[in-house]
Image (cartoon, rainbow, N blue to C red; front, side, top):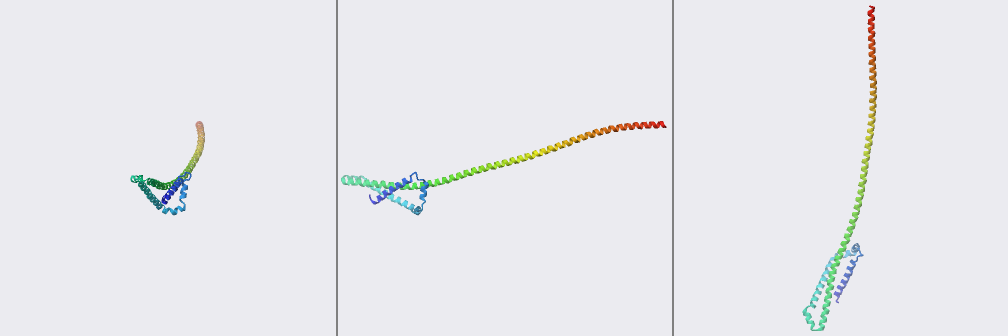
Length: 237
């Protein structure tokens, strides 16, 4: 194997290991994101896209070169020439095997290179989504707690207002009861005064009737006395 294909094979094996590690379920996306946020990666970030595109171009060139080699050694004319010489036939099959091997190596390297880029992107997106969901969940918990607290405060305020209204109502009712009792006492006193006035009026009526009767009696006696006096005066004459 030549040096370039040895490097591509090593690159393929490294990609396989990296992809397996990235897909390892025990390592969370947050840990991968914290690893990707190291300072050393920020130094290479300006060159990352260029290196990625350059590696794709190299792998594409090697892939098409391997395709060309496979077509070259699998053409019918070459196979017909190889049948005339057994040594050339074995050499042709060896070349075809190497070309196919190089084709698989370059193809899988290109494929895994794109897959690895996609996996890294998805890991970052999952880490961001998890962080955002954790933040949203914390906000939701805080909002629920605040809503529960506000609901409890509203309930306490409502109870306080209700108790205050009840106290005001009870105070008004007590005041009305006191006013009613006072009015009842005043009415009872007024009734007592009216009753006493009626009794005094009845007594005055009885006294006036007695005085009238006494006056009539005295007037009758006075008339009788005047009549007697007049009779006596006539006799004296």
